Image (tube, rainbow, N blue to C red; front, side, top):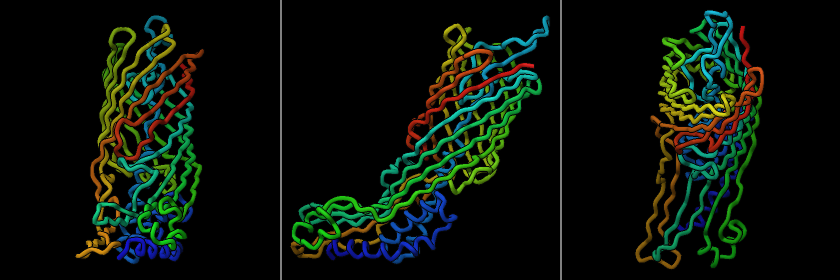
Length: 427
């Protein structure tokens, strides 16, 4: 069968499936997840015309991608503890600084605030997510029909899901030293999520187009892109609120060891990518050490569990004090090994028609493929961050950073800039 006839039939079918696709959507109408499902669902149905298996695969793929975005947007690294750490001078009874470093932004240090010391911080971070497991959001293939002629020339038509996902997060963070060894903290994110989705058909059928003028109506120019469906979902509200504690096991002015724990409550809307959808528990061990008088290193290792993704977390950071202790710059590495995440985009051949023998002038080998995220497993994500904390006046810190991905696994933003202010008070 000539490829262009198969594609034309699929194109007509799209128009009749839009209402059916909406009816099959599992997520609440109008949400970002529903938009993902609708766009993938139309593509899946178009590829195999009436296969319920294809519909299930399309929706499952949409949900896996949506879960990845929700986990990334709702569980991104948050600011660590206060920049100033104090202890009480045994002679004067007055608070004194324990370190001239203000610490890293995304890696915890073993130092605690100190009894009666509390801090309040505000920050703003923007992130644009542009890929999942190495597949660009500029066009995730859903199905494709490809014809190969005896001389090797190919023509094709395919359906692609295109997304643009942007998040803005205004974070309020609080920490308080109950004792010299125990801190409690809370983080409250206010999030705005903007998702734009588009289903497009991309084609190159010039070999048929050159000899069949009737193809111009459906395939202008014989090569190009046609929008099939599109939509937008925006949402503003709370993200997942975090409640945390840190306890110093050993501590000195040269370093120490601490344990940390955090519960992130499911206050964010999972269907709109503002949260994990479940209570998330995080915990781990923190170590710190001073190298000389102006350099500090930190290491974190722990777990995340009970939420949308379970796994192992680790981080390392180095701080450097500059400008007479007014500025601390740092470089951080943040890693997550998460379970039950999409691992690769699978290719499924649903139809193959070989070239008949002997071949005619317009005969070609036709292959119809569907693409879906079918397998889940462990995914290792790595991010880096360059950050700075500058002491303005009276224990006010101006903070800023750029969080960036260091591999293509999972759903990560290419770069996520952040800026904020932090104030510390002593008793």
